Image (tube, rainbow, N blue to C red):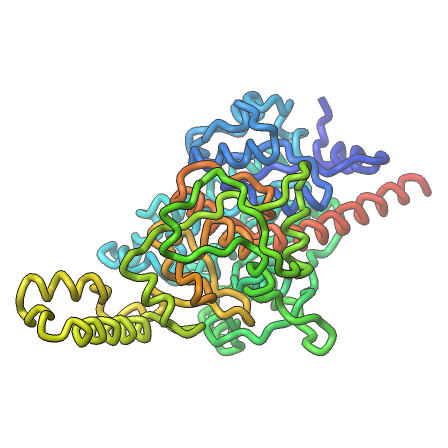
Length: 485
């Protein structure tokens, strides 16, 4: 066995037609993996705790292999055990690139209120979800990859006054890596969705290459909630959360005059099968529904053809929930409307029904009146969580998809009032840039959760292409130096 795994990997990659080997940690169903697979990486394995997601990953990348479909707890699975189970050989020689996104719930703003009861100085240490990145680093130390890529929510930059990304960068720096991290929005890379995430990238210093993030390919003027304002970054710097290390870099500029507009929801979904919300009771999960006759967009064509190996033409898992009360409200909502507007429309529909019933309408205060009101008006206060409901706009990219889709889907209501429903599993996959041939195992809720948790494959492909080009250029430079000597 070689005593220098790093140089052995560099030499190996200098051989003709040799693909970089990949390990995906916290892989989910495989959004990150798919982008790297498309960029020519050799996916050797993955670690995923959720059984449905692990089955999805194996189905798409390892022909349903039993060994790859096993769900694994990374805290209870050593790198050596994983290498043995997947027949990877010696861990330090097995892979060239490690990617992954440790579960982000502990870092996300949405979950922080639940942690208020924990003492400020103990919040981070007492939440096991916030410590899973340590397992990621444990695998890095054992496998010694040439390149590392990590994804997480922006709040990882300020979690209870700690910049976890900076701590990770410091650890990797001590292991011999050149590290940078930044904030990228998937909408700038061809995904029909505004999705801002932190990406940390590292190359082993022996490669002698700087860290470069991919240049945007699409333009879109982001609303305030998605912008990385100079004031916000300045505040983090002022609080020394970057520790003046130079690890954080500003995102690549988006030259609006030179780029095509962002892909819209309408471009992403308009060719998918039509059905009304009231028809969703009759949808069959495993049926292949034919595409509409509408001309598919360039984006839709790519989603139809990517991964397709059969002549089948249509969309599977085009299913959603039947919502007896709410499809009438969805029909009345204008595009872009939020919950307060939906609640107002529901009250108006209820008033119309009372008027129609006339003298036979139940009296206010009676049980019959309460039952009728419940059939029309949602029970949630209209002055809280305004984006609990939101209707998509066909001429704009979507707002961020989240795993919460598994609960109700009201955050993403289809823009077409004639359909009057929440989006389907396949439509959610389209908005995340998963191709139609991508297999997603599990129940409807499990499928929505896997999609919402994933790294959009087109975002991943942009990062993977940049990493592949940077890595292979560094390998060629070293080979040229050796040849010259």
